[in-house]
Length: 189
Image (tube, rainbow, N blue to C red; front, side, top):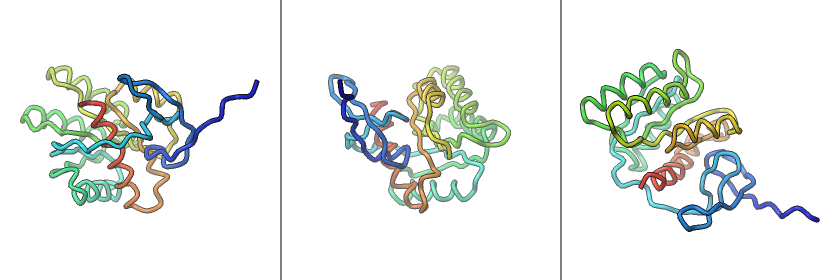
């Protein structure tokens, strides 16, 4: 018996052509990336109220590229930058205390002091302590999304993944980030 034919599509998260699978979510059939789970065939509108985003990456260049992309595309009106997970935990907590909740957090996975995964788990605990709804996290990584990382995405949901190693030009990160933010925004509506 022959195996079913696989479908392939470009995944904004993985940054390459990937195998897809079909799932039924909320009564609708969607095509998703088999690696990171991003919805591939759904065009949705960006969240309208993405006023504030926190970007966490130990590379100043990546922080600048992401911040510029968010501001130039009108995705965010304010971007706070942190260079490691410890700074993020402090900024995130202070933001919630000051009632300046971010609409999204973009976290590098591999950082010194506190990595992005541990920072995200701490962020979820902080949200629980404040009794607020989970804020979307987008994880940046130079590694491909694998089974272990899919578990991290599930644990930290709403969450998404972007392989920043597959963007040879800085502006490509902005294009892919825009698409991913649409998907994460759709998941929390």
